[in-house]
Image (cartoon, rainbow, N blue to C red; front, top):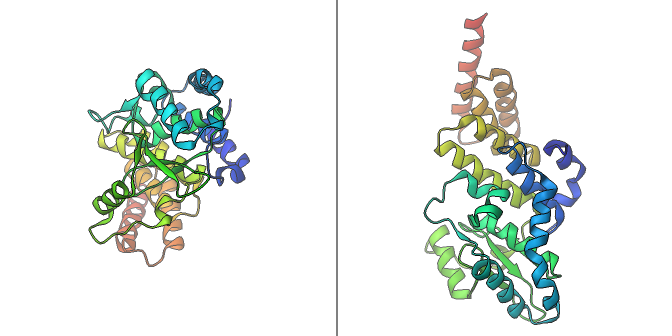
Length: 280
């Protein structure tokens, strides 16, 4: 059985690629398998194959990008009924690729994984964008700027004005749209965002053990990221795993000695030390 940690080590270079690729789809399926232990990863890839199959005969890679993107959106959202789960945005199932494919409900980033997977299978280069507040997908045109679409809103194309408004809502009224806001996200960054959403969803439902699994996956993908190490450590402390918590929180202070929460983290470490002394 493919194991997440071994897969991440093996695919370290692949994870830093941008654009749709099999590593993104496998990674998303492995994330889902943490909560669905019997999940067949290859079966999820086959479902994406089947979803894309009717589009092959249309040779979308030979027509203008805007038309091709519209055809994919029509196929996914109108014919197959995919949609954003506005009624229960915080449902952890929204972050599970198998559930998104089964229920045809998701959040922006998992709907983007589906859209990216279908686009790749029909010969189009689509790439994810970690836009502030809301994950998007871009298709590069032969001339001019990229076509940016919203996977949560039926693949709707977004104008520059649309993007400006969204940016100001997420980043404040003084924010101005720049090309860096539309830079393609790496596979690693996309999976980290999926896992972060999943961790947040589990915590909102009071499920700290499952949140810890997601936090551990984030730390696997970003072992030198201070916040990833800290978050895993704090969850371990909450769940009564003092040794792992202590190792992570000490590491956090080594990686970020001037962190704004350094004093609070030292207080947690002192509490863990007191608990150890009491236990002995």
